[in-house]
Image (cartoon, rainbow, N blue to C red; front, side, top):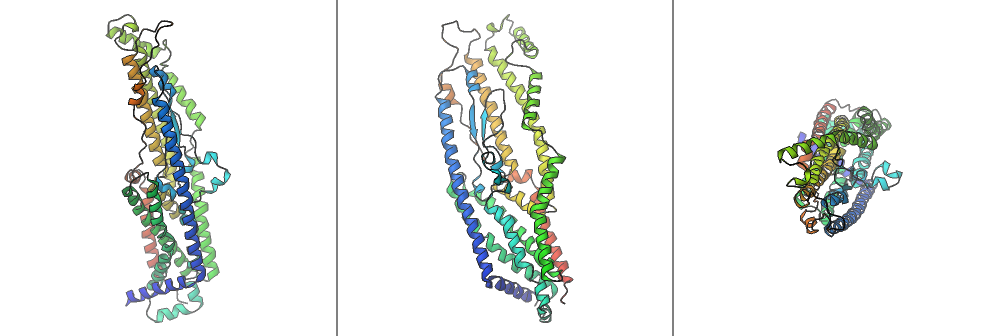
Length: 481
């Protein structure tokens, strides 16, 4: 009998919500805005991808068609690598607009990523990007709260709650029924969006369908749990309020707290508790440490003089000209190895600061479900900071391999004896440039992201458990009058 009563209350709640014309108008309007944002995102994403593809081909063509050169000159000529966001960026832009997309790679120097969307946009981008994720995370919860604030308190004011109870429905049936009914209605904002996102991501042709399906299969239940929390919050506050106005004011307060106050407060706290050095300070400290380790371009540098003496002793020769390989290339290779190790150490220290800031934000998801779903959404769509750091890591690995490959060419093919004035220059054949492969950016798998950032997923599960417990308690203590 209890199950039947629960089903009746769920059905009645849904009917009442669908019956209101204003509710249907709001639902259709929100979905239209979501579709519009997906369309804009798709156009922007495909436009960026086509430009990046064009620039990549241009960079590669210029690299391959450089004339015969000294390998070290090619190392300083450099190379540009590009990052193209995951196609689910169409749904959730995450941090993509704030992070660089292009890195210039050269020998002995590690450059940062540049050309972010925010860097070339106005101040309005600080208010957040217009995306389906933003609408579903911030706007839809407010609508759910407006729809649900009077579900129980209004019935109590109209004296119909007592009638429902007399007909056999328990307080638990009423609270669960209202919550499930509101939750099922809230899914009307979410369910139609997912297949459109899948179709748009597939049309971008930048990754396979399996990857997109896996990510969306994680994304959908995350938002369902989030909407279940919002629905439960609305019904529980409604059940424990004296009148509709107090219920509405309380719910608006919760929305402001979860969507605006807490996220901004945590962000401010993270930046102050774990301050990151400025770009200039970071590069200055890095340069100081590299100079302390020795200058591979200075023949009189103490560190590299020791290497020179040990090589002369080992090969039993008096000058570097008598060595069986190019000494300059050997020194450059050693210098590249040292500078890369120093850069990686500094980068790890900086990364530790950013990780602490991110961990604090992730932990705040345990007290704020909107932060939990936001961080999980960015992780599932590959638009989080961890995915960006993998691009930096891949770019640095490629830069190091390129520099050492060119150093090896110098060691092998360039003579130690400098060419005479007017004689043939110390160069190698341009066909060598084509042999080094192009940079291929690989998306970070969602399993890697989950392993590196487990807190948002755990927070969502925790909030689901809290909702169930809160509904049970509220149902047993429900006041009918």
